[in-house]
Image (cartoon, rainbow, N blue to C red; front, side, top):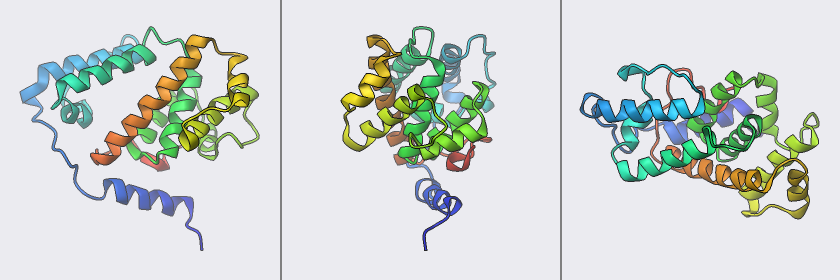
Amino acid sequence: MSQSPEARAAARHEEVLGQPPRLPPLDRQSVAEQVQADTQRLRGSVVADQPPLPLDAIPEIMFTMCRYPGLWQKLMDLTVEIQGANAVLPLRDRKLAILRTGWLCQAPYEFGEHVNQAHRAGFTAEEVERITVGSTASEWNEHERAILRAVEELHADTMISDETWGRLAKRLSEHQLVELLILVGQFVATAYFQNALRLRLEPGNRGLTAR
C-alpha cells in the first residue's frame, strides 16, 4: 500500500530533521554585528523597507553559515543579484521555480520558507498544492506550465527541451532565461546544504506540509 502524502512528508522530515544539525550555529552574541548586517542586507534586497530583526529573531541558518564568511558572502551576493533590485525575472515566475525546485529536492526548510514568502506575494494554498503536482496540473497557463516544466526537465536531465525553451522564450528575454537557469541551480545548491546540514525549521515553517 502506498503512503499518504502526509506520511511521505513525515518520513522525509524524519530523514532530514530527525537528528541534530551536523554543524552547530555560532553563539549569537559573538557574531551579532555581522549577522545582523548580513540579515538586513538579504531581507532588504528581497523586500524593500524591512525593519531590522532583533538578534533572537534572526533565523538560525545565518548563525550556522556565517562560520564560513567567504563562501557565505558569495552565496548572499548571488541571492541579492537574482532576487533583489537587479532581478529581471518576474516575482511570480521566481516563486514558481523556487517552490518546484524545493519540492522536487524534497527540501523541508527551503520549501516551507518559500511557501510563506509565496503567500506574501499573493499565492494561494491551492496554487501551492498545484506546484507539488507540477506542470501536468491542468489549471496552469502556458507560461506557468513552461516554468514548472523547465524546472522538472532540469531536475531530471540537467537540460531543457527545445519545446519548453521555445514556450519560455515567448515571454522571457535572453537575460530572463539565463536568470531562470541560475535561479534553479542556486536553489538546488541551497537544498543540498540545508538538507545535508540538517538545518532546523524556523517557527512558522511547516516544511513539506506547508500549503
